[in-house]
Image (cartoon, rainbow, N blue to C red; front, side):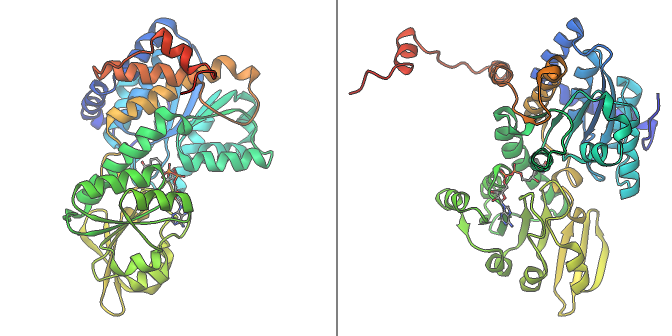
Length: 419
Ligand SMILES: NC(=O)c1ccc[n+]([C@@H]2O[C@H](COP(=O)([O-])OP(=O)(O)OC[C@H]3O[C@@H](n4cnc5c(N)ncnc54)[C@H](O)[C@@H]3O)[C@@H](O)[C@H]2O)c1
């Protein structure tokens, strides 16, 4: 089996971390047990471009138990956990091409190595694998039956591809399932983004002005958790409805230009480009901390920041670089503007990834079984898949709820009865 990882020696530590996550992923475990019995993916070649974390390893274990052959590469140069990559190769029979802190060239070499595997199914997080396949690797396109996409930014790119008539095979929008975005984007990103900022800086959030750019599912999770730690949260938005929601949720809403003057910590979670840029850096206070938790490292204009800095301070702490301005102010950038929750912490906790990766596993089974009747477009996760996952998750949490009586079912399905 081919692979490219930092060191196989880390495999046993990685295995312990994978097993620690597994204990908190009961839904994926149930799917793995069924897959092991039924082998619904027997002999299917799958290439995944995902964050190489213990939670992803548990998705990989479920797919391999189902009979799949799997190659994985990283969906971000800084998010790979090298011990987990080693465990996947040594203990779980997965061909991994991922090293933490790989450069851009290495990142795309790894994507190409996963495509050399001639996948029949792709699992992507951000659509770098799919866009490489469609632009540079048409030689392996004829094998592909279908795919899945994990994140909002990937869905935006795929919809643009579908609209332009460029998408060549059906892709299931795992991100858009309720069992994914309501929990992963909100509670997962909320907690792990705060975790990344705190691990990188050890700064106290209580009493600070924290600026949250974007009040989508990730933004509202981050704003909620930062408020929970006592921060004054300021939201910036470009969408009127979401700005109203943020206001009624009790946050201050203003343009970035105004927030720049008063913020202590800035975090972008928009999926957009250059949300924080030179005009904002010029207005920021000395010691301001800037980071990103959106998918790509384009939300902060890093080149702009470099261009107005007099010098750069690198050695203060890991994952933190100080840009010293000509007037003596220093602005601190975390993790080179890449996903702060994965680069400075460990990404989402296993409990939420249980739902995201249960959705991925069952969507993989669905796309393999149904590819012949699906068109090359972005497709919703089937409702019965979402229903099974939410029911099973709640059961594994030991929570019971009421069920509709026959009278209630009839009432809710009728229109005649009023006051
Ligand atoms: N850190 C993680 O682990 C993680 C997890 C899930 C998703 N993501 C990524 O986070 C990003 C956001 O995802 P989401 O699900 O919250 O998306 P979303 O579409 O629900 O929300 C994005 C919000 O940003 C706003 N926005 C866009 N441009 C803006 C600008 N210039 N200024 C202020 N606000 C702006 C939009 O109006 C929208 O409300 C995406 O890139 C997604 O892929 C990251």
